[in-house]
Image (cartoon, rainbow, N blue to C red):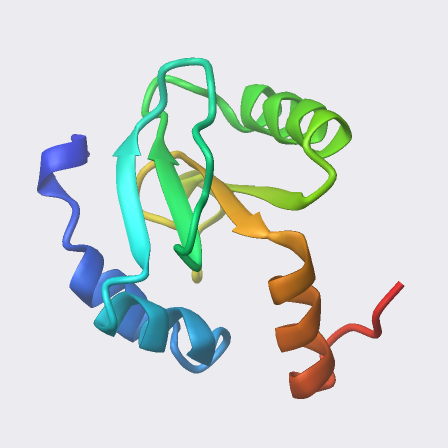
Length: 115
């Protein structure tokens, strides 16, 4: 699948049972999607940014996310790859989020306690 073939509306609608905040953020225009060019930009007031990285394998995405988590502690970096199916993104992505905001959401949903 190519980046321009992704139906992000359908993806976020499909994942709202496991991540309801992302569906609301998508609907509100608070998730930005752009191509990955080996560096991140400031998240600003967005809830999340998805960097499309279609040529990256899961191991590469994990290494990049781990590095960004170390050097940008105010953000939480995750990754997703279609190889894992279920609620994975339909194309390889890096996901940038505000760490405090995400932990607040997790605490409110009782998914993960604050560290």
